[in-house]
Length: 163
Image: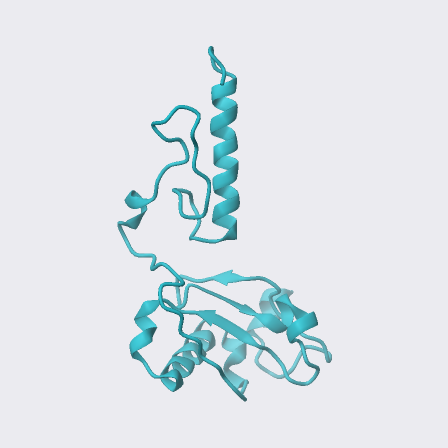
């Protein structure tokens, strides 16, 4: 049972292998919008036996005013909150990279500024993660937007005048 294993803080359960959630994760319960254990998502590049996890967490521009040490401390605290099994783990090193304007900040009311896939120009459509769809600005959002454009094209092709 994966859920029970994630809550078990009794010790290492990896059997010498990287263990955990092999995926990019999004959270509304943390200050960072997305995160991943790179030792699991990209083991060829990042997994090193006996060295544990390598967490990548992506913060937005609100993090720029804090020191790197404070950001690492905040990240660990929030990870411990959403993954109780991580509380006994020790951070052995960290690296903080701050890139201005590399992410947009998701906040209430911003969806109204995202364009829809269909435009007022006949047979001109927009696809991309920045358009209006149910996901954050991400690969999933870009894929969903492309599918929504395909639906718009099909709807017009099936209509009385077609494309």
